[in-house]
Length: 229
Image 1 (tube, rainbow, N blue to C red):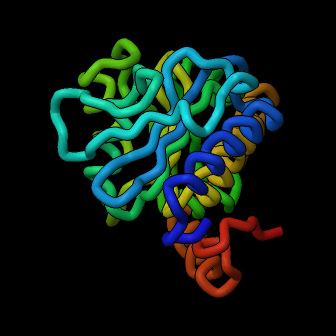
Image 2 (cartoon, rainbow, N blue to C red; image 1 turned 45 degrees about the vertical axis):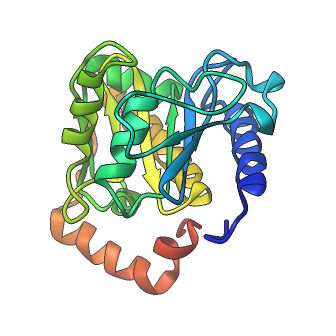
């Protein structure tokens, strides 16, 4: 998705992304939410609207610098707007945030199990482990703080985490990238869940993951969002 995309195009892209998440089995009904950076504001999915009823004009607009939760649009923003706003503030490398209740991610989040480097694709997240953010009730500032802590800084932080007893969240340079990372995180969770069922697997070393990350730079994973095989 181009950095020069119009607001109209971004709204349409968000709706299309919601439908894609549902088709991928990562969300159902009105669960989860998406935001996209738009200048000094963010576009974010509305609260409690089923994806099959979502239209571009329902996407809310919120000022990233505002502390009051003020919004523009016909529908109120997702109740999770706080962590979307705070991630986009804290992580300038992220232009879009995707939150889902993907089944295997949620199972591991319920068990509060971080995902170790059981597959080299974890390198796409810039880390050797997918962390678990501490629990707090949905929609609260405390939950936002837990997520920001788990993701960490631009340098040395992660592009995704599990949310204890809740789901998962990822952030990418743009919506295309964030959607891809959401799928990759669920894939890692699926693999790890089944590895646990057979007694565990071999965990790659930090050096091996760093080597993979360097390989991604030339392969195109970091810029295009298309996986290596």
